[in-house]
Image (tube, rainbow, N blue to C red):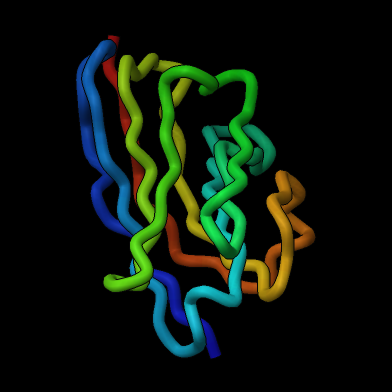
Length: 124
């Protein structure tokens, strides 16, 4: 069973930065593609970024492209989301997800495991 634990959320002013972390445990990290999703108030869950098993391929939603970087550390079994120039519309609960043997995907249904989420609030 895969366990995912997010951290790094918080309150930040518009224009600021945050780095989210997701700790992966329970299975072989390198066999999972990883993704970050978010769900804002009264909104559906949407993809933010994803990274392949090898780390060689990435995906970014248009709304965050150029402001966000996804990365993974195989020694630490962790995936990160560096977010810069944050905007109030980035306010959401951010979730980490894992997809065994998958490629880069923006579809929530492709991911088998999910973390509990970490709150990001961006004030104007």
